[in-house]
Image (cartoon, one colour):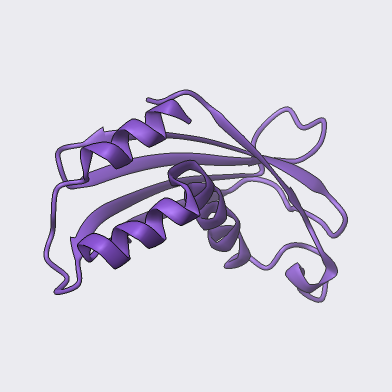
Length: 133
């Protein structure tokens, strides 16, 4: 696994359901944002424009261990590893302030694909940039 990347997320009222707890699909958005920061948004856009390559979620497994509430400022801890030439596996955990365990744990598998939706090797410059963090 890579080094641990940290990213803060503020929980807004709009993120919650009627009970004041984060509506579960929103965690996928939070985790996506962090992966984009690790890879770098500009680099992702350039990769698509110049080479026609992008990333797609192939598989997602989330475990919900604790509710996350309006006004929490949480830490998302992210690590990844390569799994062959086409796929990365991301372990992402969302931690509430002063928690003793992660509120949500996600294992996300992503693949590199071209515009025609065919698997393509992850470019070496992307891997190097992610490793440099």
